[in-house]
Length: 550
Image (cartoon, rainbow, N blue to C red; front, side):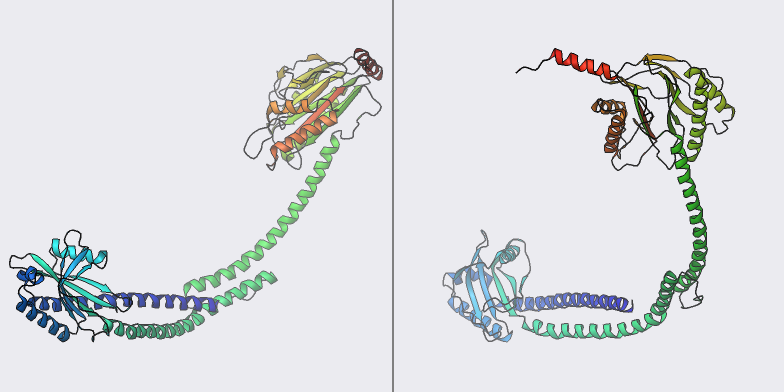
């Protein structure tokens, strides 16, 4: 931690030093440029006094030779006295400012160890780039008093220099030529390196001093107290035992508050551990009880198949998958006598333990009352009165109850607010049978339920389910629906009741995917089977109707 903090501090100070160097360099260069520009302008302005702006054209035509020679001597003398590399006068082509004619050209190669050659009078040359064209234009057209160009890089034999341009005007104030003074700037470059070195050394010394002082201060006032707090927190995490109070370990309130918080955290954590130990034990006890409750609930429903091994007139299969440890759905089937099979499927409002208890009571009432005799409607009426009498929790249950006469296939049923059954006719397909619905069990006392009849023939199948099947929901909130349910049933219509239920369940699981189960899912399917003699006769009829030809 100490190394990280000190290393970060050193990095910040070095960054600060770099910024100082950059700013210092910019200020130095700007100041030198301003000074060189100002001084060189005065040099150029002074030299322009020796050029007569009214006679520029005469000079180019070879006239005024004596005056021209006198001005040339003065300009040569200025180049020597002012210690500049070049003083030259040019007439620029004002069409595009891309070329010029030389009028005067004074060279002093001894200043910067250069090898410039003097241009003859009338020598024509192209402008040295767009920057020069812009400067020429500014003087001719915009009335600029002077323009300056800096060249800070060495190009071939041309060393870094400054060129200042001033106008040469005639008696009418018109610009007739431009006088240029080129001055070396090695003094600026020679002075810059010691200046930059001085800044770098100063910054490094400052970084070293500040870093040492701050490191000592941080270690004593911040790092050591924080390390003490960190060590105590690490010890507590390993040993899970309260240690000696940290007390006052630093001069700053933030660190002191941290120390107090660690002491308080250890006390609170020990209390929390004791509490969580008790809660975990209680949760494990509840979990064990729920597991036993789930086993009891599962054992209360018939779950051994084939359910009636000695009965070959029908086949039956059912399943119940609760959304929680225990559920509120239930199914049941039982022989009322040798020729009557009781079928029941129900869905209790809510989930979990309350629904499971309500389900157990309802299941017992329905089965016991059915075995006493009477129609499904009479059974549901009796159960509703018993439930409503003691239903302080205001729960309810939807129930479908049917009595199947095995020998004839006659089915008497009553529906207390449950889902419509689905019927498969031999050589046909599964279709929803919209039956007559009564009110839910436990919803209102004094209700009377009605019976209805339907006929099942040999080879027909009856499918019962709870709303957890059509309302199974995927991760996007889309429900499985009745249409998918009937389509899935028809995909497995030729299967046994077990094959149908397992196939539909696989379809639901594939549709739901990773989404959690929303509701209890319960299904029951019964098939009225054909006897062996009928099956053999049907096979023979089919063989006679479609003989095999050699």
